[in-house]
Amino acid sequence: MTAHAPEHVPVAVIGAGPTGLTAATLLAHHGVPALILERHQAPYPLPRAVHLDDEVHRILQATGVHTAFGTISRPARGMRLLNGSHRVLAEFLRDNPRGHNGFPQANMFDQPELEQLLRDNLAHHPLVTLRGNTEVTAVTASPDAGHPVEITVHGTDLDRGSSRTILADAVLGCDGANSLVRASIDARMQDLAAAQQWLVVDIRCRLPLPAWDGVHQVCDPARPATYMRIGEDRYRWEFRLRRGEQPEELRDRARLLQLTAPWTTGVPDWELHVLRTASYTFRAQVADRWRHERIFLLGDAAHLTPPFIGQGLGAGLRDARNLSWKLARVLTGRASEALLDTYQAERRPHARQLIRTAVVIGALMTGGGTGTALARNAALPAISRLPGASDRVLSAISPALKPGPLVGSRRRGHPRPGTLCPQPEVHDAAGNLRPLDDLLGEGFALLATAPLGPAALAVGRALDARVIPLRSPRHPRSAPQSGDRPTAAGEAALIDWMGSATAVLLRPDRVVLATAAAAPTGGPCGDDLAASAVAWAPLMTGPGSAGTIPGDLVGEMRRPT
Image (cartoon, rainbow, N blue to C red):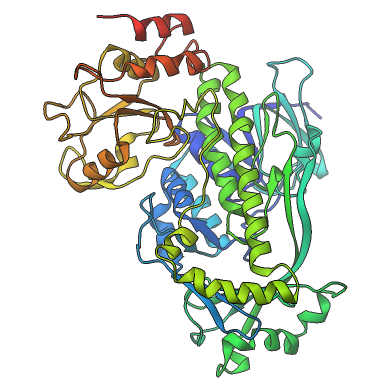
């Protein structure tokens, strides 16, 4: 039998869940081909994740499926906290249909439908190949830095069950909680809290249930539970198992109907179709390392979180958004290999903080004994009546990125580097309303409320950034310099967000990299950006970059004209 040369690809993505599909699609947007290897031919058919926030909906916008996702998702109205007798202790409502990122703050959906959207969307991205029925059995990094990663695969398309080798310049391990990729780089999960056993129940009912149309959290330490309406006819319950209790004790249909009865009063039993019951161990874990050479961990391979704030799947899509543009710049020669070090440095603390937040909120809502429950029952009604309580409880909780080479100093006020730029709807040059990200493009962007000086213009040239000039009443002589020009209400919202800054440099993932204050003389703005460039310029230059060597780049930005 003739031996074939190993297939060589720029990026191999292992796992075709939402994280892997998103990562491959974003790489394609940046011009990098990706091969997705998945052991299943079709999306896993049973529901798993059911919630994404507005920030993650915005990431779906970057993939191009946000409009379709809007048709299969359902905005969550808010949350009620109940005691063990199902008396309402507190109610928090969402009054604003759109969040900071331009989408509903909470989106309920069916994961198989999202996965199918992302798969169908690959038809618009010929740079991405999805190969199903292919199981990865080994991932081996080369002992020599800079050499491809060796992937051993087995699939039904191979002769007589034989194996095949694929070489990849980079590997993204999106292969879930039992990640083979994680094992291949000798990474280990670290526990942040004790695990808990829960039973998840998904039911379809053509009749609407006689329950308030929002998320219900039963704050009863004897039987904590969560109820959510996922779609027009789909509902989910989660029940924590008691010490020594086995899942089989609750899976009997009569017992399930007894548990769900508080939400299904008056609905005939035969209308309640149980789609799935599954025992889950809710873990709070984060991997001790997320990268070895060009092998990376994303999603559940890197972190696991309890579900109390609905950030499990969203964290994986944030991983994909953070890594894709960095890896693309390195693979296309526009950035230093050291840029890849910022992936774990930025994402691991962020994921860890969200996991800890989920653990704390879960404990506050469901932990303790009888005494704690009584105190909680007394405190929650008073808390819910405080001014602005709903906004504080239900608002986006994603923390800012920690300071680092790609997150400039936070001492200059608002907007804070490391935070996301908001996304209002703005008018493009033709007068059409469009989400801001549609104008910013795929790369870096500069928002400016005053004419840009030589330093800021040098930054823009070096990064091939799109400049978005904003008409500001503080700078009436500001004028377009390049790119599309947003106007009206969206422009006003951006200017208000910028505060005292006259220029804001955005990374491709819409995170604020650096800001510039107004020039003391009222002249062109942006000189402050040169100082921040000292940190990031060595990472952001390469043979294919618009800038030259780091020293020349910084010198150009500081050189007077």
